[in-house]
Image (cartoon, rainbow, N blue to C red; front, side, top):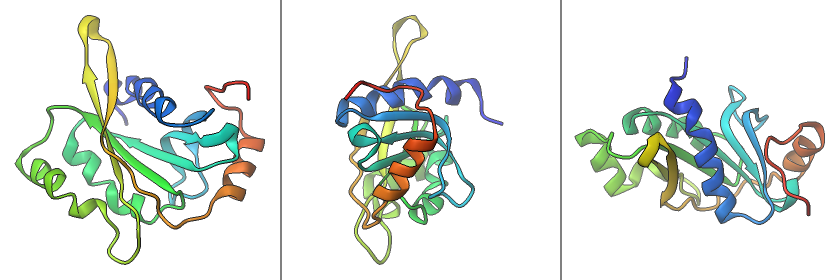
Length: 159
């Protein structure tokens, strides 16, 4: 079961991606067919649902988010991200984030990106990219367009 932070962090993480993308469609708790277990916390499909898919898994602690990287490396999406609350890194997680080695697949291009969620005044949350995701060689335009056509976005902008 996800905690309150992970649920609340979905909107600031979505806003962070909105700042990076062009007319994205945002899905929350999306059943993305490109993931082995299906569910992703935030899915953003660029270019009004016809472009690159960005999948994000959110955890409160950095170590828990880093533990999701192996599953993300197997996912079908050009851009993959983890997100966690800033300041929750233990020593092992801090070293992993500095080296970034675990964010890269062993045999192809791509890097899992890192989004930090920050607590702001008034118990509000914000989010910023800490490590930019790099494109994985996974063409999913048909998958993204099919998903967009059959699912209603939680956040959508007129094209």
